[in-house]
Structures are given as structure tokens and as C-alpha cells.
Length: 227
Image (cartoon, rainbow, N blue to C red; front, side):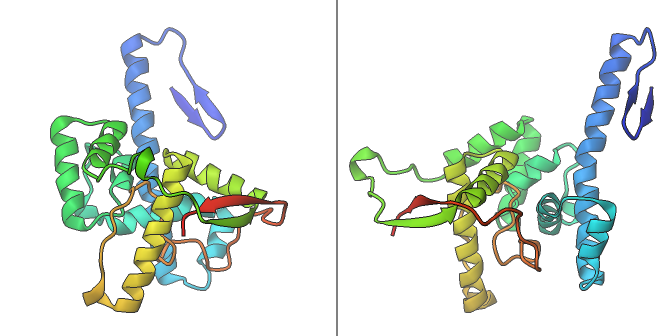
């Protein structure tokens, strides 16, 4: 089997076992590359604060994707990463405190959970959402450009969560980050949220630094937000 920049050359007559083994190896490389790219960006941001974005553009990589990788990499140093679990397993838990991360990583390893099973187990430990009888009608509406909504939907899809859950989790983590920054280390409080691999606003790897999504100017659409 020969890998090239634009494809994979498969030998004629490859046995099934060899083909399956090759698939596992390719999947391992793909998963490891998320850690590699995350660590690469973390190093760049720490050592070349005024030039790392130029490096990203020079190699043609997506900043939006890289910042997710970098955020997860920061949340798990090398000694705490589990080789038997995927990068996405870790991303699901990235917003949690380290002790909770380790607890769920242990469970995922012992029970051989898929990413979806881990996500479901984490959700099951959270308080249930209020039923229809106690639902609160939205009292405010936020007008945002349609292009921005598309950008948000794309981020939610890439993270593997429902759009409404992604919005809620992102706002929760942004609020927690802002409150922690204003209260200081002793006043910091953790707000449970989905560890979908999306950095909270205000984090070292959150969007900012002069980076803006393309095509934000456009027709606005109302988004209901509870007051």
C-alpha cells in the first residue's frame, strides 16, 4: 500500500485482513493528527504570539478547526491522554475539571465506550430538562445575520451535537469563563456543559485574535433567547 498526497494506492489482490489492518492504521493516524495539530498550535501561540497566525496561513490550515484541537490539547497534557481512547473521547470531556475528566476517561476505558456512548452517559448524569408544563417561553429575540447562523450550525455539526445544545453549551462556557475572570481563581466556579471540543469564549484558544468568519454581513434572522 502506497500513500500519496492525493490518494492511496492499494495493491491488487490484497487480503481482507490486510485491508482491515490498513484501515485501522489510517484511523489511528487520523486520530493522532488531531493531537499533533493541537500541540503544534499551542506551541505556536505560546512561542510566536505575534506570528503564529501567519504560520497557519502559510501551511493552509483552518484556524477554526485548529483552535478546537488546541483547546483540547491544553486541557489534557501528555501524561493524562489515554492511548486507547480517541481524541474525540477527550474532546467530549474537555470542559470538565481534571478530576472529572479522569473519572469519565476511566469509565470509558473500562467499559469500552464509543464516543456516542460516553456522551450519552455524561448527559444521563445531568438534571433533566424541565417538561412542557414548566417550559419558559422566550422573552427576548436576538437578530443575527443568516451567514452567522450557518457558521454556528456548521460548528455544531462538526462537534457532533444538536444546534440548540451547542448554543447553550457555548454560552454557558463563555459565561463561566467571564465570571471566573472577574472573580479570580478562588471565585472560579465550574458550569457543567457539553465537552464537544469547542473552546469557550475568552479561552486561550477561542476565536478572537483578529480572526473573523467569512461572510458575516447578510440578512439577519431572529433567534429566540430566554431572558
